[in-house]
Image 1 (spheres, one colour):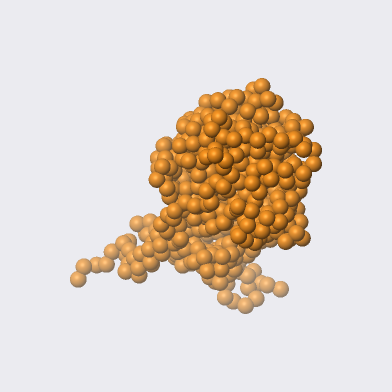
Image 2 (cartoon, one colour; image 1 turned 45 degrees about the vertical axis):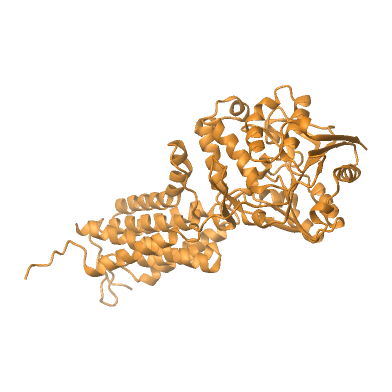
Length: 354
Length: 186
């Protein structure tokens, strides 16, 4: 009988290894390899007149009077929530800084009240700006004390985590080129009505952040960060805001396409841009740009592309370093995806003063 | 070959500890439950590769204790992920060699590296290397779960390798009243 080789694997060792390896491979697929679902359907834009999307811009000093007047001109919130639909408000809560860097909580509560008046069956606030990986998951929510304040007013507040895959669902749509599958938060995917409440700011990567760019917060963090690395590269990403804006992209087309496709994966029913004050010259945080007070506008539309184009023209009036040409790449993709029109001649613009 | 076999078993057992931690995480939806389970089993697993020393329950308790401490510290330091696993690796790595201060220091450093890389390597590959090399994206996984398995495997492998390092461990004297060095205890 041949002598057993003590140095080789015993049967017991082999079984241990196989069991461990199989379990490891099985666990790697823990829920993440489920098939993709269709994208969020949403409600087609009800704010149209003569086949043209409505964009309402109201100027004034009293936010409640301004919003009520703008909504009346637009067609109200009843077409969206009149049948008792629950509404989800998607603000911009990216940093621990007050408006206009982040959405004003008072405006969130005001819009929630208006939604209830129009018949909403419930209102929820959601964003996923941070992650437990960096300890930033609750920063901005805690800064605004919005969970407690929301509870007092009967508004549910959900803090998503950009780094927890289990909170997201994979969606797929033909026509998406940057990422054939986009991983969007379950809250967003399942929402009946989404009210988008962005601020109007300059941005070091996308040049402008408004209705379309605000949808980044609904996408799985790893996918957002991947779009930045592929689009900007490491060198541009590590520069200071000013230099970062001017530095060349690694693949600009990828980033701009991803931006528009992320917005397509969300498709909010209405966007309300709070432009009472805006961030000019740099962004998206206070230290990088200049806050311009006294703009005193709200701009509303069901068409994110027309809305961003209008807001872009507004930014041009206050920031000589900015032009709408900078964001034309992603406006074009958004238009191709059917999110709206970038030709304001094909939209119905209503400007009011209250 | 004996050493290679020991390391391979250490890696597999460490990964298995991570996998069971993942199962605990999935069942309870609590990150701390997954981490605690993985850390306790990692401590036990580090004692299954010969030459084993001490009671395996002590090692399991040590692993669990480190995770609980980091969880408690989360109130002060908001990055438990980046502390707990490198610390686990450092402690197990330091205690793995049979003896020798130099080996213990090196073991601690190797274990620290194993824990850090284990938690971060997948992240680094999928979030940095794949996009920079224009390779197809892969981020359809849970950072925590993969991190537990890879860190478990890395720490398990490192601990198993370190087990054979250092000099001979001084035998404890079985005589009552006599210390390990042969001196009479008072």
